[in-house]
Length: 120
Image: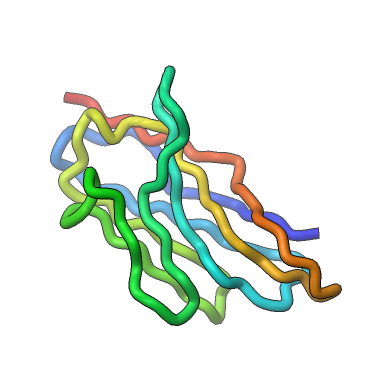
């Protein structure tokens, strides 16, 4: 079994910062892509940022220059540093990872989601 556990969400004022973390655990052989998505009320889930194992990060236009994704491969953890937060960043943020388990099965996994609320 593989699990993604997120932490770090909360309530912050506009212009503030938050850091999200997502740790993968379980029967992991390797992790390819890790990333973050978000879903605001009444909207579809959208990509925020992704980071392959050995390549550059990819960001949604709405967060470029404000958010930074990073990985600690030794800890199977991905982070999202969010600066200059805006009310429109309010959403549930989901961690996502493409993981090959130790029985060599590849699947896409999602975290349980963490709420980020930005007040104006």
